[in-house]
Each structure stands twice: as C-alpha cells, then as structure tokens.
Amino acid sequence: MDPFTRELFLTRSVTALLVILLAVSSPTAAKCCSLGGGASYDFLGDPAMDIGMNSYDQFLSEEYPVSVAAATDVKEAASSQIRLNLSNNSRIDLLLTMAGESLLGKGNVTSGNATMPAEAVGQLLGNKLSLDVTALSGEIYKMSLAAEGSSILGDYSLEMPDGERQNATAEGKWVT
Image (tube, rainbow, N blue to C red; front, side):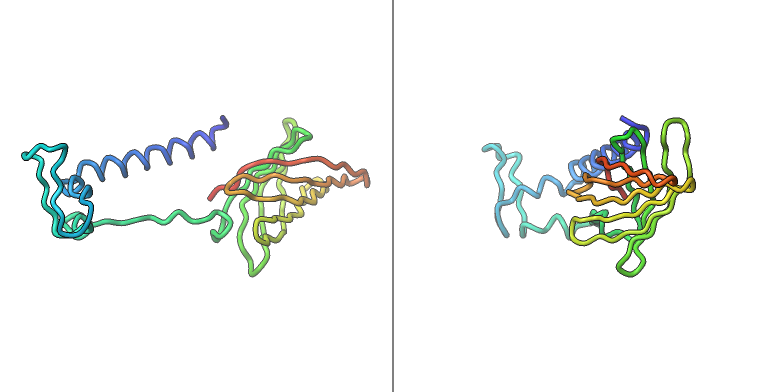
C-alpha cells in the first residue's frame, strides 16, 4: 500500500472510530433503541434498564449538538486528485479542478526514476472521464476512462514526441 493510500485509510478509520465512540459514549445513546415515539424500552426484560423516551428522535434534541458531515462525491468536488497506474509501469498524479464544464489539471508523470510536470484538460460526463495529459517532455496521453466510485479504469493512447504511438491501459483511484 503506498503512503498516500495508507494515510487516507488511517484517517478515515480513525474518523469512523471517533464517530462511533462519541455516539456510544453519550448519555443519550442508550435512548436510540426506542421502537417508536412515546415508547418505553425494557432492555432484555431487566426493569433496571427501563428507558422511557418521549419520541424516537429525542436523542437528537438533547444537550449534545449533532453535526453530520456529508461525504461528497469526488467527481462533484471543486477539486480532487487522481492517481493512475499505467500498464507501461508509469504513473500519473493529477490535481483536477472544475472550470465550467471542463476539468483542468496539473501534476506529474513518473516513468522509471524520472518525474516530470504535466498538465491535463478533460471532461467528465456521467462516469466517463476523458483526459488529455501532456508531459513537459512532450508525451501526450489521450485517456478514455470510466469511474466507478473512487476507482478508475480505462484505455489510453500515448503519443511520443517522435510520433510513435502506443496503446495501453490505466487503472487507479480518485480521491478528494
């Protein structure tokens, strides 16, 4: 697992764990088990655990503020990153931004031990992403990709500065 993916995984795991711990540790968390408004819940027949509630959503209105962070779709974010692994053992990392109906990007193309700056222009229609990535050294990657959630998969055509063309595949991740 590369360091970026590992850090993203750890961040999301810790965040999920904190949300669960906060929800479970609040005094009102026990009240969420009511089966309807105004019901009383007798936990496993133990009268000491009889929890009365005025309504099923009472726990939302008590002393603890509730905030919900909506997870945005990476494809709808103002800017997002993609990391593509190419079948020719190269990698493309881009930061994409929406500009009207187009995507503009800047990043790097890494091939072997050499990393060079690159720029991209493209368009996203539904889950279809088309990108033209131009490396500083003159290579042009014309990509036709499909996004499913945060996964990206597709084909590309590489045009070398001397006119030689290669066709291959790309796969990667799209993150915010």
